[in-house]
Length: 244
Ligand SMILES: Nc1ncnc2c1ncn2[C@@H]1O[C@H](COP(=O)(O)OP(=O)(O)O)[C@@H](O)[C@H]1O
Ligand SMILES: [Mg+2]
Image 1: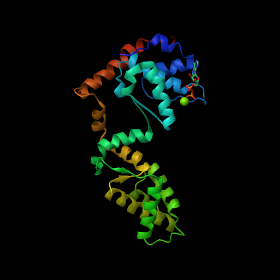
Image 2 (image 1 turned 90 degrees about the horizontal axis):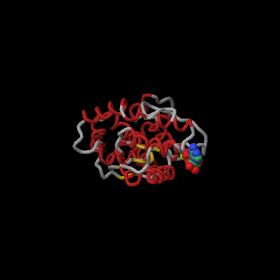
Image 3 (image 1 turned 90 degrees about the vertical axis):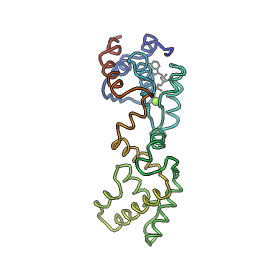
Image 4 (image 1 turned 120 degrees about the horizontal axis):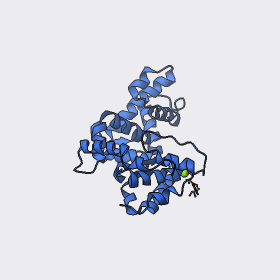
């Protein structure tokens, strides 16, 4: 399936990196400084999951913050795995969420061809909402109000929940603007950057089976997938001694 063999890529790692790469079951958090070899751990762990653990490339999501970091991961994985790497989702948070939403948006009432508003569009819409609500634009600066809406969304707080927490007239204005802003976005079949994360969380929470089914290769039933996972935890992966 791929060119790299475990002997080769495990030899590229120091003991701490090797331990992280060989820990393939359950969540794993690696904390280490800049330039200490974290990306190398990630790429080698992906290669190991595919080579030694029977994980399919399309079952892996390698996610990071910046396009630069995603590009670096992709390049290194293509060096290690060749064409197989192309089937792996190696993306930024926003692009991964965008890809999920493009398919799943109808579940939330959006059409799949939704528009993504950039920062300038977002502030412009906030300003229009404030005008519609007849709030003094000097007192309620669109950029500032939008920052509050953005923070709420990043904390997964929707307009209704935000309204229950209002503690001042300023908050009240944010709540009113937030609600109108979301209605206007929805009516325009548009999402902002924060929605891409927030709406994807909603999709994953509300329709987890549907989304995971969408990522499975066609013809694979969910019971097959479960068996694969069971096999993986007791099978070829654990045959790699942790002290190699
Ligand atoms: N065990 C290692 N042996 C030799 N070079 C390594 C090792 N781990 C990482 N490197 C190299 O060190 C540099 C930084 O590693 P990288 O994984 O990009 O670090 P980070 O993601 O933590 O910033 C890269 O050039 C990488 O190839
Ligand atoms: Mg890195």
